[in-house]
Image (cartoon, rainbow, N blue to C red; front, side):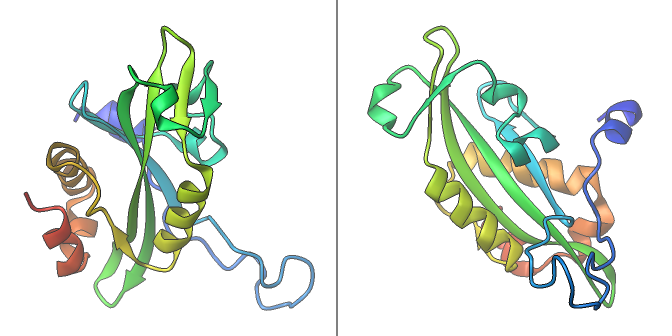
Length: 169
């Protein structure tokens, strides 16, 4: 990956607690500060950070009508939005939670499939440090593994064996 591209695509890495223990407004709210969204595109053999996916506005999600029926998008290309949560252990930052959510996009027909309940569930699981990638195809898992490993080798090395095993193909 080119150094310029690496600088533009950065993971959100561990910020301070936004409530700072004051217990006032925002206390008990879920913080997405340590989460980043990675788009895995098995059609183009790429993976990249696209923070706009956090608001359903990633490059692949724009200018299409979203449907919750996969069969209504028969010619849709497969993409994965992978919710990656970063945490810190005694060795430093690591990829703590990783959960992939499927989308299918047919740009020509301006139609796409996405299960919002699945995306919300996967975001929550990632926040809780879960690894949810067993439903992803092997090619996409390899693209994700290669991306995470190359993007920040230290974070990859600090990550759990569970993650490394789940992404090994």
